[in-house]
Amino acid sequence: MRIIFWGTPEYSIASLDIFIKSKHEVIAVVSQPDKKRSRGNKLISSPVKSFAEQESIKIYTPAKIRDNIHFINELKSLSCDLFIVIAYGKILPKEILEIPKFGCWNAHASLLPRWRGAAPIQWSLIKGDEFTGVGIMKMNEGLDTGDLLLEEKIKIDNDDNLNTLSEKLSILSAKLFLNATSLIEEKINKNTYSQLTKQNTLGREITYARMIEKSDFKVDWGNEAIKISQKIKALYPRANTTFRGKNLKILKIKVLTSDEIKNEKYLFMSNYSRPGIILAVIENEGIIISTKTDPIILLEAKLEGKNISSKKQLIQQLKPSVGEYLSD
Image (cartoon, rainbow, N blue to C red; front, side):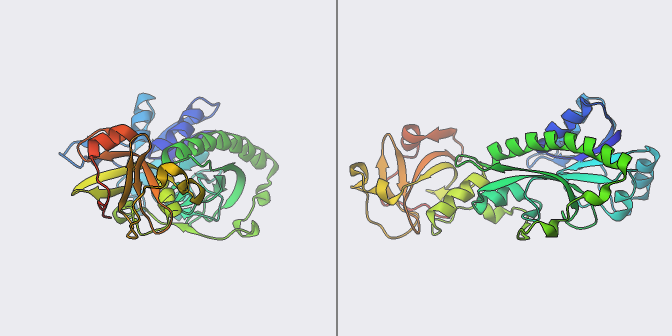
């Protein structure tokens, strides 16, 4: 089939690559426009655009897609069978959804209808979900409300963070989408589109994964330890606090359980009740910090202007003192 691929971030590349190598023909790629660096005026292409350029595929990067008559007519002229959409970054309007012969299909990184929206991977980690997955759906005008063709569930491991879970789901999306394309062809031949699964029949709660905002990256030490841990994993590597007036990115922590706190090596911890206080500095363990509930051990971090450090090296770099406060 003749396919136009819609995607923008690194996450989408595994799927684009697998379709390029498949029996199908990727005739064009649509991605978000180039963006300026935070410093300077140099324009940076999206990862998907850069990958498509290497593969010599025709690329479109429209600033807007709604009511863009020239772009819509251009898409129509390509005589496309399918639109494959993975993390493109905008909702496709009806006039675009109606262009491909066999519809627009999307791979969404959640177990729909849970975590519809822009940041499903982050919110599944923030909320401590045990499972997540990928659903292949036929797109409609709603926000991730389409009927499902395929779905696969995976367990979220305790040590997963945004990077590791995104990589797993990116690979799963590629595999599942290629399988889905075969099913789409089969359903076209047998005219069995009615067999798609409506999301409201799955018995799951509808939740929305809003976009992550700048304020979300601040670690709130007044929160419960487990919630702090979940947030750090979800926003890796950008969750941060302030130490002696400098930004400190928190990359890895461990929550100390009640049984662990009874261990003799933790008995000398200071008994500060205020969250965000350094309770102890243990050379081969890390920096112990108070929270609303259990203390945590800071295992890995990056101080502003410095390299990533862990445990002993981090202690040598920060030179922390018991009783110092980390602000949010």
